[in-house]
Length: 165
Image 1 (spheres, one colour):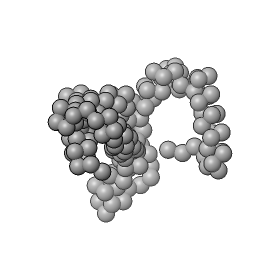
Image 2 (tube, rainbow, N blue to C red):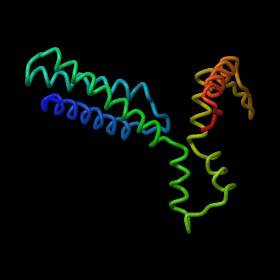
Image 3 (tube, rainbow, N blue to C red):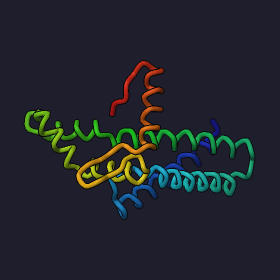
Image 4 (tube, one colour):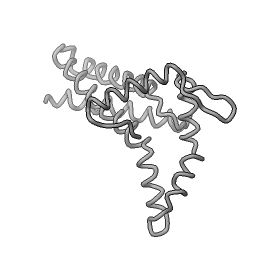
């Protein structure tokens, strides 16, 4: 890989990452905001391409290489951030790590998740997407939610698995 391409991709990804941290610090949220991350990634890509063009010229092949390499890095970052950083599993493991003797009763873990902001945020998100309907203290699967769940179950079934998470 061309050193100039590599350098601009890394600088663009770094710019997007720094901007993400700044936005996250200014407006903290338990919602992963994937759309916002994509916009920040677009900014980083534009920064990387602009930097390459200003510094080394507008070679189309090199700009395409910057684009494809940057897309790879942003997808990896999205998977890392949404998959690991926002993972319920990682949160539970973190709670175990901080517990005395790294051991907690299952009922305590389940109760902590039920009371967490993530649980409430997830329910609000599902409601905002019209996947569930909230009525008083009850949550009901909407028609749209049923279609999505049936589709996911079907795809999982093709792979020989079940819906988990």
